[in-house]
Image (tube, rainbow, N blue to C red; front, side, top):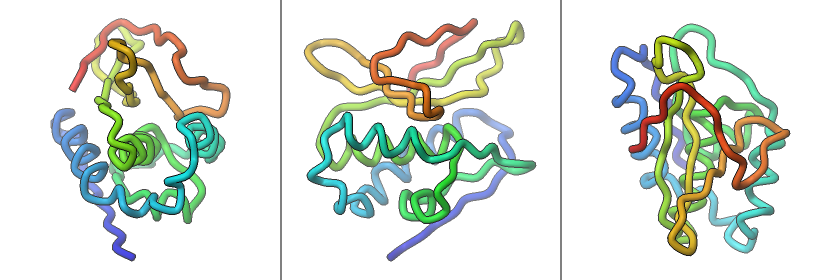
Length: 142
């Protein structure tokens, strides 16, 4: 088992998105035990992981670590969802958003491509559902 944790300050938002993508493509094999799970089943597993916000430095970690610690924020859950999409060969992308007047992004989630549409798959909070609309002051698509 390979586990990797990156701790860094968010000096540049694009760096954190790059790290999330890197982890989705580098560590997707850690999710092979979930290969028989449907998207809805895996999404349900991820959204039920308790939300836990990073204090101080932002942390990106492997899927195994997030599952082992059984807690994570939007970045860690985006790594899980992106890794799942990568494993299943489902096209996906990361979206960041702001809900504040300054439009500085503070949240990231995944979207997957199905039947010509990009569909939100934000597993950050237990109340979230696949396909839910997101409301914000600014969205950034990567």
